[in-house]
Length: 32
View 1 (tube, rainbow, N blue to C red):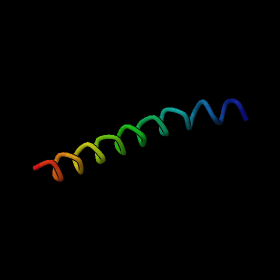
View 2: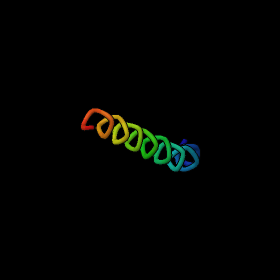
View 3: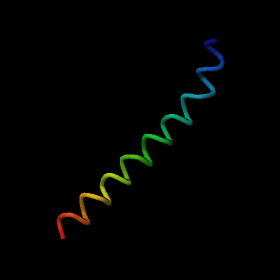
């Protein structure tokens, strides 16, 4: 189980980073 999580963790980090960028883009659109 622990090894599996080590494989998935970097993927989760990438997904959350993409979500943050998408939210930032939305906020910029509303600000304009």
